[in-house]
Image 1: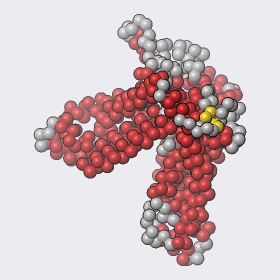
Image 2: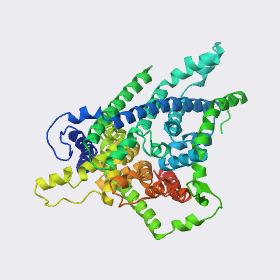
Image 3: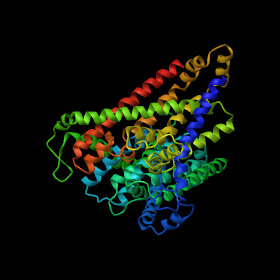
Image 4: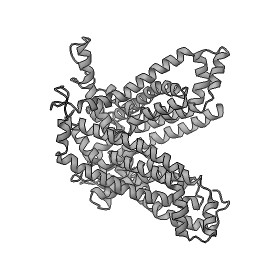
Length: 257
Length: 288
């Protein structure tokens, strides 16, 4: 027993180093003051100050946040209405698979499918096509999460609400939505994060004038290691780490309501 | 379909709720993907787009040894990534599943956390490490192991390591989920009864983890096979995968039907594998 535990413990430690060493290297180099980021010159925040005046990065960051917010709104709306509908009609496996399929289809296949569709119907590629595309695949995740939760709901509570004279709208807002709240929050956080980090679909469905942040990062790292990416990577890392912890906290609070 | 309790009225109401969303998904998911896959039998237009006549030339073009080699390369690289992830992911999941509840949660969060970081940044991190002037080469030089830097970047190995790094959490999580349900006493008992370490692993842990292992293999293989970013950034264009062919046909050559042919091949490979996985998973469940 001891031998096995030791071997798997050693591998676990190696795996943790494997997972964190690359990230730590980027974080460490982000404090390098040298403009050749692989040669250490000294510790400082020079590149952190520079990044705020980097126009392509800052404007693409704003676009990314905008796309992620609008995508979150629509995928939450569409995903929730589909889930409520499928639950009411006691839909079978086909409609469930259909609504969650965009999460399973390889992103490259979905991306070029959307590109060809947009071109065929002569829609010019810009942020609105990115938003539509992101909404498709985020909706699939929202449906997966909300359907799982809605299945656990006791339908007699909704019935009791209607029996006691509440209208359909009142039942929706006072009974159904509060019960779904943890799933809605989880769906919103997931949609926002997925959209913000998404590269492949945005790469194919966006126009050249309005790149999102991942697209700017992609074109920068094609030219190798740069100080801007070290800083940007570190900032994104902090944002996602805080986001994950925040989502877990909110999930716990919402679950206890 | 379950009909109990679903009155005709609530079915109608259900359709009213779901239809707008379902129409949206039909227009922007089902139609695009299905029509794109069928595009492989059409002819490329002069300025992008597609025209008739319907023909199967693209399939014979795709059997050119150059393209067959790319498809085989992709299968080898994606398989190597899945196997490497399994080899280091299984012991990790096994170790974590044996810990106390509190430590299980801490380590699982630690494993997932990097996965939530932008995947371009995570890929980029390997540029920093594997570069000729990168951290690993500098370290090896400083301790006197090497004089000249080892060429690590822009090799198939770099692509495999990079993709393993990206998708390893997708291997560890399902295996952990399967093992976590296992009664720890079972393996202890097997050991107490004189079963050797490897025997208890082979007869108890591995069979019980099998559904998780199969899901993990699919979770790692699927995004690896269609990847075009990692081969480009870490393979330096020397390692070409199916994803690169699809990207180039759509964006550079503007030959949509030919690009769609490779997308169709990619999709078919994945459908076959997922079917195999669900078949094997059912079998594993019966045996377990």
